[in-house]
Amino acid sequence: MAALTGAWPVARLTVRLRRGLHTARKLHHQRCVRVRFAPSPTGMLHLGGLRTALYNYLFAKSNPGGKFLLRIEDTDQTRLVPRATEKLEEMLSWAGISPDEGPSQGGNYGPYKQSERIELYQESIKVLIQNESAYHCFCTPRRLELVRKEAGRRGETPRYDNRCRQWSSSEVKEKLARNTPYVIRLKLEDVAEPWDDLLKGRTSHNLADAEGDPVLIKSDRYPTYHFANVVDDHHMGITHVLRGDEWQTSTPKHLLLYKSFGWDPPRYAHLPLILNKDGTKLSKRGDDIQVEHFKD
Ligand code: GLU
Image (cartoon, rainbow, N blue to C red):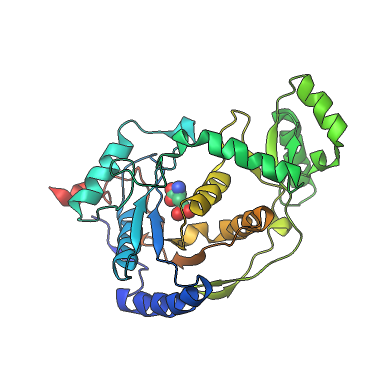
């Protein structure tokens, strides 16, 4: 088995999280803690995922009335692995991490599989179109490819040029009436709004520096990770998001979504990653680090 490096001692994380919780409690008016583990069923559960689930579980259990939810983020239909959800549930239960709410347990905030919540996303996106935080993009894959190549040629970061922001509502209506294929994008703001990460402290990234407007609804009408994740965290009453470092650059997008909806965001804590000995990330497809290997 590959040796592991990069983890923070649990005691240090716990102290930081406690301190964060103290502030969070004040902000959330004594609302009970609700946290979630939100894996995509695209492979087997690895040690990093298990640790994220464990920290969320412990955080919920160390707070009176705290709840730990399992939510399956299965909106990327092209990457689904058969039986991955059942396996995930099996591994969590083997590790003694039992969700209070989830696909098998049920609960008042379900369904707990995103593929069963598509109507909610379709209703929610209408709000952002209406308040002009999001827009229809009719660019063809070919055009997007050309824009990327062109930027590369100029030595710039390849990214979408936000061209479809320009269409008036009558132009959009006309294109929709002609059944022109589209995606829906979020209008990024050109500012780096900081947030207070419960582990890292004051953090910020200016997204508009590095990327074009991100897609919220794909051409197959399914939401992207960012959109479904925020809509669900809000509707499931999530108070704290404890997740791996790799999601930290997504947080400004998520905060912008909260702002666009006019919702209060949860508190965020980004956990340092567990890495392989050679510094590479654990993979759901790697053989030696899957939780299943520890079971037998
Ligand atoms: N679906 C994401 C994952 O596979 C969830 C990330 C998050 O916790 O927001 O890890």
